[in-house]
Image (cartoon, rainbow, N blue to C red; front, side, top):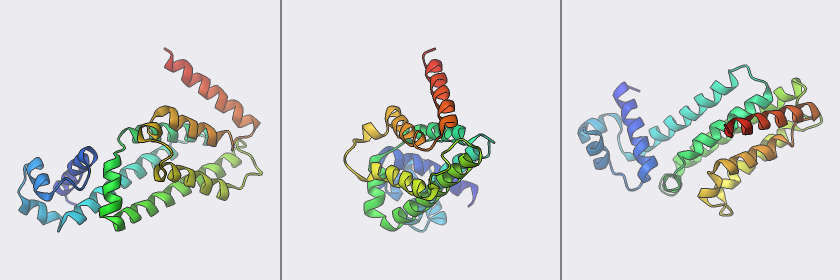
Length: 208
């Protein structure tokens, strides 16, 4: 993708996050970005293609951030803490209107996003569980395939149900409880000691 097209995708993504997708027309995009509609249509044949590019850009960004975590040579427990921090920051930008518009008006794009995100999440959790076993920090008797699917379904269920409000499931406290619930179910005694010490250290730093 050319540099100008990448810039357009970045800026349009910000508009979608702020106002949702449906309300932003191609005319609005051209006006907001200070370019002609002709220039816009040189890169994107229609709004659907633009939406698709924005979604791909968001997915690539999250994927790159996740991969950076797993390239830090951390132990499995430290990885889970890092992922929790990333997830907490990611939810600060969560826009229910954008997700709703994508699901309702661009179901094919939403389905593709959902499937790719599920696959990447599952593989990340699975690899982390296997690593934790190898490091002697996670329960050896644990079935990592089942736990990976369970964790993914739990995360997806939060967004798909109406049990929790948007304000609830995007709060740091909520994300921490999910993290705490998950990690305490997978660590052994050695891993639990590391987890408890890490949490104490974080709380101590927060009080400073």
